[in-house]
Image (cartoon, rainbow, N blue to C red; front, side):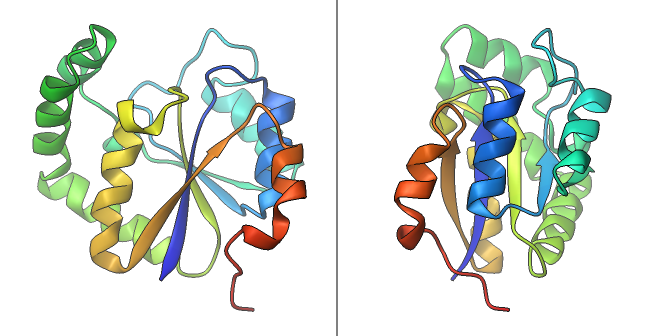
Length: 163
């Protein structure tokens, strides 16, 4: 089984997020936000790209996998059933299906992490993207960027990549 990582930047800063990705061995970050802007320092698209590239991590813009406004509003109001319905319909559209296929292909050769804001993956659309990648033989591993040292402590429990 292949692994696709996910991470949300809620509750962390850019330095700890980058350290987490580095410790785990992530080689590329797929930014699956519909609007890749953030009020949080370091997380808007261009700044994020620079931080990632400085750490030797590729930035993959994947706005086509972002949550539509209606889904974001449902999630923001706590209506996760509605959010899941809206996003699932979006991700089943041909453009999104093609993007997930491209993401699955890209993830064969490098460790890829899906990035969005929400800390809890179950309340974020990246979880649904990860579920769809299951059809290509992927399992998800959810990362949390607030304590990179936990991944150092448990390095032996992380998936091993074939070289």
